[in-house]
Length: 125
Image 1 (tube, helix red, strand yellow):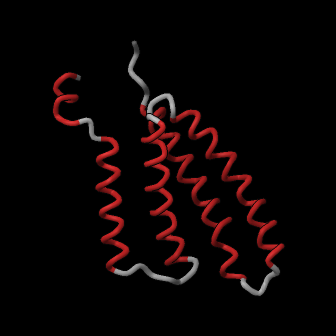
Image 2 (spheres, one colour):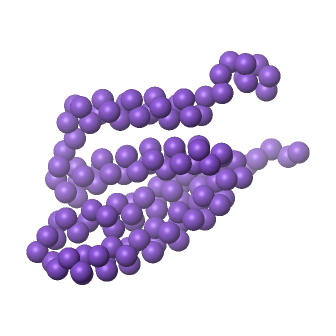
């Protein structure tokens, strides 16, 4: 069986990153424009979310050939937190505090465990 190209691992992650940027703007971008009518915010969010889905669905389809579904979801959640942290500080002007960083470290530890197969799997591989 031929080796899996690096792009098979990288492309889904990049697509998930891009989709999360769209979704973060869809979910939270309207908070900067609270004077706008709520219905307009909902419709604008749906329009932005369309582009998120155009990236998320293919990313999961492509990614499922090299990642498990649990790994894909874990990747997506880590990306979501990273994107949201940057968005919160940059776009909404709400900088992160020490406890946010500490929580992110714990979540990264959890993500590591999702991908870790243990020493027995490494020796068998």
